[in-house]
Image (tube, rainbow, N blue to C red; front, side, top):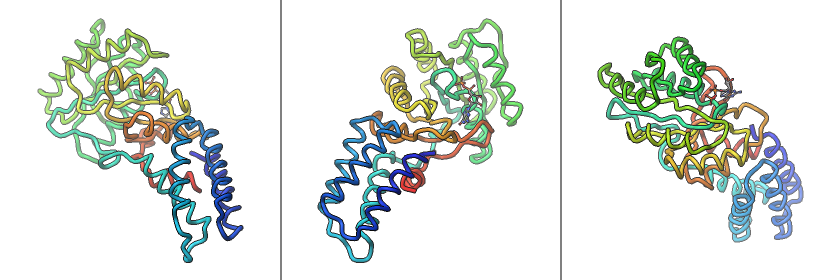
Length: 297
Ligand code: GDP
């Protein structure tokens, strides 16, 4: 993750560090390269611009301390600024799942990794938090997707709501809610249908489902490799449905990590988890510190 950006920034700062003293021109040149590196990582232009501006203001005002080299000092300022942009409020990865049964709504476009992430998260809630979880698929247009969730459920030892053919998403949601209450579940997760692109029908369906349960968490699952598209998708879903957080998938790929930076800055929503592979354990809490460290290399 973030390999290109990381290498690029390291290169910039290596050069700086070797020069000893840090002139204003050095800072400017370095930050110009930082900006290019961010853009190449698919960070949106306004976000990259704001980021560089904030770093420049901090760097210019600061006296060069004797204990560290000027290069290291700029690295630290960039590092702190990255964490600022990436950090959300509260504990990363924490979900509001008190007051059982707590509904979690999983939303996103088809192919983004929604069903896989639903199961990964259910496994995590079960194993790390000791929660009893029920999963239900609402993807009535794709029977294969409903079966996929059932299969994953068996694999990870988490119950899924039995599939009843011909039922609509709202009816399934009501049944899941009732079953979660009667069955003594702590959490029930609703894997909504995805579409290849955002459309009115999809949004209306998700709205109807949302209004049945009032989710404690509404998590948008998006492919982290799609960069700014992922950010636009998040803006759209947040406007219509209201999301409480984001899961960025495929962060195991050699993708451009800029989505993480833009996502937080543009939507104001926290990235709660990252998907790092197809396996059921390949889900990690999003950690700004670690990501910032990786960016800087
Ligand atoms: P959905 O249509 O949004 O429900 O997407 P799926 O959950 O069916 O995922 C689509 C494909 O992406 C599947 O082959 C998953 O195994 C794969 N996938 C999901 N998350 C990740 C991830 O974090 N990394 C990688 N490499 N593959 C993933």
